[in-house]
Image 1 (cartoon, rainbow, N blue to C red):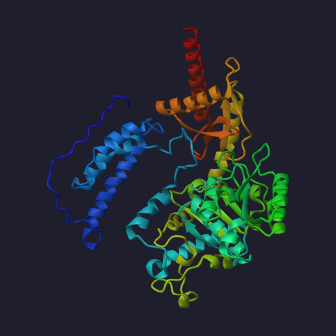
Image 2 (image 1 turned 135 degrees about the horizontal axis):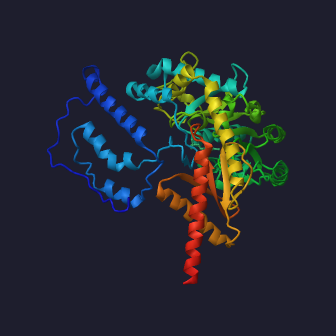
Image 3 (image 1 turned 60 degrees about the vertical axis):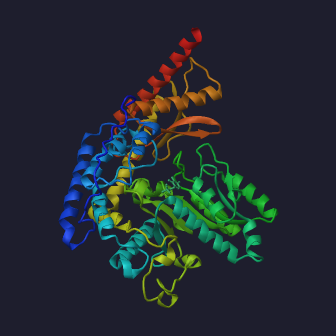
Length: 506
Ligand SMILES: *Cc1c(COP(=O)(O)O)cnc(C)c1O
């Protein structure tokens, strides 16, 4: 990698004549040819990739991308694809590789990928029925289906597809804020100033971000300590709530995480529901990661209590094996969506609201992709149970992987596996390190593993200590793959420690 320098060929051509640019009845043969070419390039690539990354540096890739002159088009899609070999395909991060174990990215199911062709080619926009027709009803049926999996009452729930968990959480907090402010008196700034959101210290940052975007300020999202398994500590929440309410603050929402990003921990949903009711707060469940449990035949009970939520975030693009983006916010009561509804005369006049199913009033987006189609085709071809089985498989793999960690004297789990992540430290008893040295070593191990291209892992920091993390979402990954990743970590870690010892002796 290190030696390969940018080698882009930039032909000195006049601007090309490109008659068949627009997809229409006369150009479908062009569309077919170019799409076939794209598909065969992807197929060849996926068939030949044997590592999650080549370990490129940002500088290497920037140097190549800098050479591209966007003022001078190449004149053909094919040439543009070929140019992309060096800019993107050769060094892309391939999530389907069994040794990709870094972030919450899943390999994607084929029916969904195939369906993507329809999403972009027909290019339906989901804002109004008159732009989407059947698509709107398909999306609505998928929301009903998800609501049913959650356990919401039939005919009561509603929801909307979103770009991801971040947007779903923002919308949930927006609805919660509007619900809370409607009950308060005073000017809007006065009402907003006292609102508080309670989530665990391991909750996703998008909750805190939502507090900022909604005009409440970052600090309006109060982090509640967690127990040893990284679940929100109920007692600590009660103490905080008592103090805050005594100070005149208003609990706007309790946001439980089911499946937190680092540890997969599931906050105690029934207890949190009860507390939310007690203090009059909105109860949101961020199941962006753990939503796969909804389709699981072995582990569905772990989400017991989710049916009592006021709103739920699901990321189908995490544990339903869907391509990005595919997410939804589902609410227990359709009426709660009304607080964000907006009616534009040119698009979805209020007068027509009952007669025409327009999704735009429920969405933070206007023009919006028909992402729901990917999930639809997946459910119609594979079924939800198959997805649940795949998620069960990665949960079982993570549990077995914990045994593999335990077998290695240098690796120490930071907490038991709860879903499909493993968080652990590399610590060699022969080489005691202070915290700063330990953290630097953890970063070095991860960086060297990345540069080697053998595997990709993540890292996180808990109470100041840098930890290594595997996120497993690939049912094709085997215990042997995990074992090799762990061996590579130990060997890189030992190697760095040996280099240090040598350096000290010199
Ligand atoms: C990934 C994640 C999010 C954010 O979802 P995006 O789809 O990345 O926007 C929110 N909450 C949790 C718990 C997550 O794991």
